[in-house]
Amino acid sequence: MSLATIATSEKLLAWYDVHHRELPWRMPPRDIAKGMLPDPYHVWLSEVMLQQTTVEAVKPYFRKFLDTWPTVTALAAADREDVMKAWAGLGYYSRARNLKACADTVAALPEARFPASEAGLRALPGIGAYTSAAIAAIAFNEPAAVVDGNIERVISRLFRIDTPLPEAKPEIKLRVEEIMPRSRPGDFAQAMMDLGATICTPRRPRCMLCPLRDDCEALSKGDPEFYPVKPTKSDKPTRSGAAFVAVRPDGAILLRKRVDKGLLGGMTEVPTSAWTARIDGIDTVEAAPFPAAWQKAGVIEHVFTHFRLQLTVFRAEVPDRAPEPGSFWSREILTEALPTVMKKVIESALPGSTKRLK
Image (tube, rainbow, N blue to C red; front, side):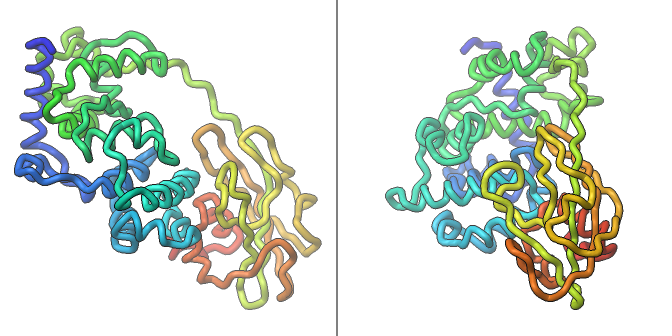
């Protein structure tokens, strides 16, 4: 490591020691300096939750999970349906299924310990390149190059990388490895994350407060907001379908479970037509799961990562007997693992029903 890169990492760590964010899953640098070690379970749980989700949204979920399942063995012993219910609202539900599968795997390892190496972590269910590097660096202080969206932005500006994302990812990782200190890789990774989240922001970066401003090539050229370079975005396709809210005389609603695989796999839903991310479903009453006096109750829109979904909502009063597959749930469905799109559907059919879901 050159003197210049040593100076860069030292400046960043000095800034982090003073200005780090206090997060419920993070062990602050002052405690690590005293020889305390982060809990790998906390690091893993937070990293899985933080994928595609904001820090503020994750905080209450993280606390709830720890209160309910304080250890990985406790999570492994939990019923999967309970885990899915607790996850409801965080989105990307395959993460919840992988979370449970990973907990089961770790609980079966000697002393229920997470592997301490990046390679060992990568072999666990649901843990990819980024997550394995993050856990290895933060929980075990292994010199693993951690690269998330914040770090991509910091590095691309620091070195003025002109290659568009995602093609720039290998170069960005090499640059991270170049300046990463071997003594404090976990603190370094979190310092980079904090710098990107609080100072080197996508818009209007606060460059005058940045500890790396004297080293930043993009700032020296006066164009930091231009980086990272991104390819031209294509418009998200819009898919359509229909959703059917069947209401019993006592107000209970007909729900069913989606298949485990695919979008919203294993989640609870009202019956819908067969829409997917790639094809439209029927958006008329002809797609109804059974005959009833269906009445149109509005149209809702929900944005997924790769497409928009518009669902025409139909409502009908139905007798007590539930058609197969499915079962009636009382308004205490508020405790069920309902994805956000289904909350929107029910709210459209029964205004005010989902207020307690928030």
